Length: 111
Image 1 (cartoon, rainbow, N blue to C red):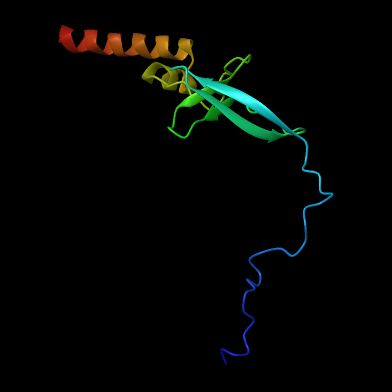
Image 2 (cartoon, rainbow, N blue to C red; image 1 turned 180 degrees about the vertical axis):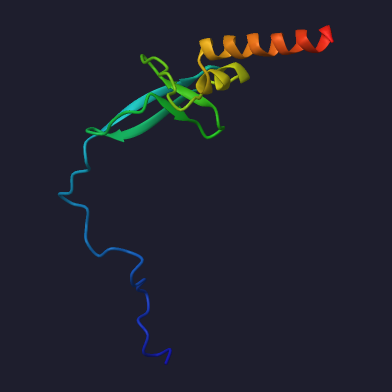
């Protein structure tokens, strides 16, 4: 069996075509900088949309050079108890409930 195998050939692992006459797609190099001053260069296709923020290999957030940091729409405002209460009741309803509870407590202490 070994005498029938093709020797000296890596089938499937290497293309038999040459790269002559092949032009790579147009690219652009974009530079990002972290808050600590670390500079990162990333290659993008010429027609690609450039993200304003890039995460570096070290996990830090880098901002596009000559760009501004965008506001993150995914950041949610942490709702307080008051915010959640205002979602269920209006100010008028809350004032009315307060008056009722104060009147109730005054009656309880008057007895």
